Image 1: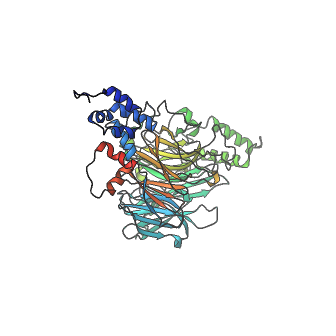
Image 2: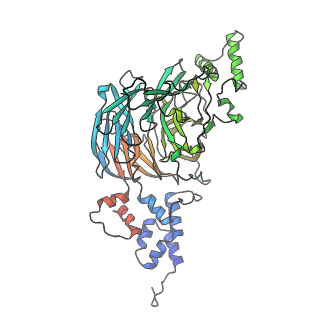
Image 3: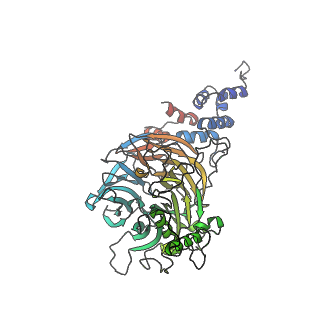
Length: 579
């Protein structure tokens, strides 16, 4: 200040100087005097610092819930769960999966040591119970899920057997006394299984029809199977779906549209850096009247005459049967075409639903049509009468031309799907995939195209059935097609996290599409899970046999403070980063 109390430098000059500083230096300079403090809180200054530091595209607006650019910068800097606060070493082999209860008070872990462990989610996490599944002839546990009221735990595992065995089992454990209530066969094992409601769960079975054709059956099971009356069903068939070219249904989950409450995510910003060349994901609405989708619609013959490619296939098969032509296809190609032709007249069309879109429930799973590696997402609506085991065990009575069920929607990923997860409100589906080379053609279903090391994280809006975000990237995987395994991801209100084969977990912001943190392990990170109570708590599970607990810098400061003392808000979060 000069003798008259006026500043030597006007605010505009100080502002220009601050623009050339880092955000740490700006906050420190703001402690010098009141004038500098006022300039250091300027909204335009923090807007510039935000876009520069986080490298967000300039045409992406501020988060709708943000009050100021300063507070938005602070949110991304200070609330990401990136500080390791605890390492759990109770598992003796690779840890494969983590799941939280809906209250957030408990979580479960599955491992190659063939145990499922249930933990108390206190300030210092502690082991509550461990169930060994080896006495039931399991090889390892791979997946768990709490039911909606957190009274039961679904645990999925793999049977002991030959190396190529695909059989698994689902067990239901009571959380009152940890008793095993029921066991359900599950094939293939990577169907995993899931809850439909508080007392009914979905499992799978696989029936071979030919060398590369099969039929997947999805079953609804009662969690309590020791019913006293023989007139009470404990199982009911939900859907029966044809598989072509060695594909199978895997990774089932249920999306409840009644939970939709999040605003629309922003579409891609035009100025974002272009991703590597990948084919766009296609969405086929199998219930539409669009002629472009005609090749995918499977309708009863009395309502949809064969025409186009299907009519050509029919003539081709007739010529072969009557000796007018010799097949130029391989045995596998001929098997797939015959199976597809026969299914055209034996597939039930999608049922019209009277429910509004916000009350529907969808069954979501990975599938395919070209090869054994999962490269498509199938979506099938579950109707109200299908949500109970009451009624015929095989489901509603079917005519002879309704042997298979058709899908309502199919999303083609053009790559190997290695993970899926729903947003908390079930509106958005996040998909981990390793893409195929652009323009690749599958000529042999047993030899899918090579897959990229980069993992793409796609985002689909289940309300519109469209991809709404450019694929997120940062994480990597290295195993080839025949050794590729599932990497579980999780989604919170603001963030999405995923494991990877590069010994790290990753955290992205859902709104800005940017990677905010890398979480270090000593081996492959198989699973991550956000606490439903506080998204600033994240767990990660790894092949290094550990579960790591990550908290945000903000919560670490709160927990470490013996006697909290008031500190200036605008630099307290920075101070912890410098210490």
